[in-house]
Amino acid sequence: MTDWRNGAGSKDGLPVRHGRERPSRRVVWPVVGGVLAVVLVTVGGYGAWSYEQLDSSITKVHVALPHPSRAPGPADPAESAENILLVGDDHRPADATPQELAELGTQLDGGATNTDTMIMLHIPAGGGSATMISIPRDSWVPIPGHGTFKLNSAFSDGAANGGGDAGGMNLLIKSIDNLTGISIDHFVRVSLLGFYQVVKALGPLQVCLTHAASDSNSGVDLPAGLSTLNASQALSFVRQRDGLPRGDLDREVRQQYFLSQEARKALSASTLLNPVKVSALLHGVGDAVQIDDGLSIPGLVDTLRRIDLSNIRSTTIPTLGTPTIDGYSTVAVDFGAMPAFIQSVVGPPAAYTSAAAASPGSVHVSVQNGAGTGSGATAASAALSARGFVVGVPSDTTTTSSTVIEYPAGMESAAKSVANVVPGATAVVTPSATGVTLVLGTDGHTATPPGSPTSPPTKSTGRAPTGSGPSSRPASAAPVGNAYGARGTCVN
Image: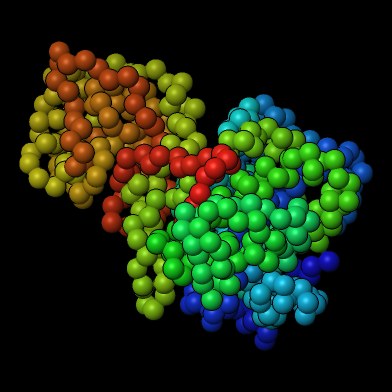
């Protein structure tokens, strides 16, 4: 069984900063947690003995989740939406054999841990089409208590100085919660060797490339079009970054694509009706998996059964490029676009959806011009005043791309009243707000004067995430990406 205890630091026990690139053949592996999820769905068809076998071998870790959605036990499929953080790390167990390391294309590294794959699996209430939100490992973000650095360093920072796996997961979860504004219900963590064992058990997998791929660092060497990969080739396929048009971002797409294809295979008759294959899957999962202690295997299986595996959607958080900062290769996160992006995935808060618009005469609103030019705030203030709103003194603010309505929790009715007369605006729950503020962006949306038709209920995001970037305002909602489970899809 994998020994997870050495994941906190270097050979001498000191914490390790994993921001700089390692030498060639660095292992950056795919959506292992997602593959695990698919495997657990398969296990669900084999009854209580499978649950007991897994429960006896999977390590459970106590972490302070923002708001765990349920106690251990079977899930209620209709209970609520769930967000499960899937974490894959490059930890190689100390007891890995030379043959296993050779098949992985790596070597023993003393147990230092990078969380190289981080994906939020969002399952809507009632099930249906789930969405995988990839968070690039090189995302340059605030790490609570540790300054701003690459996100994949958060686990090691938290695990250092006696924090262990619980400390590592706590800090990683807190960092992602602050970044996205999404509260995590559960987590599943899988090691590199565990991924390899699962993929090997499932057998060869067919993928499709838009262009031929050859890279000595990852070991990939595949033609354009369809290819059938064994487990070692699959590792090469998902670890390649050099030579891809968008580097890390294209690698994220490959990971999402790979998971969708694995999902189809795991639920095929050739897997479900093959006891030998299922037994191998159980062994691979149990040896290299951690979950939070608020999650049970029956509960996870029931949750995952709610997903339409033929329509798993995939997307990546909004980014601005891949700059080099202090010698580190990074991914610049578009913090301003994050709230609207998250809303496009998870939908508006229930409090906003159910709120009735307040009477304009009872609503106090301020207007800020974030368009960068003109006197739009003055004109919008006049339009709102003419409609009966109580309007403050207009002012200027930082240039932003989107028109938004910021409001604190509890003022949903007031925000909706303003939103109804500002077509195209996005309402955003903003913890720092003390009242309702209309922020005009460069998109040109503004308050309409009396006589103009009111808009239908506008978009609303959840709480604005914590971060820093070129704009603190949300940009237009990003599309939710691709359903890579579809047959015939090819990727870079």
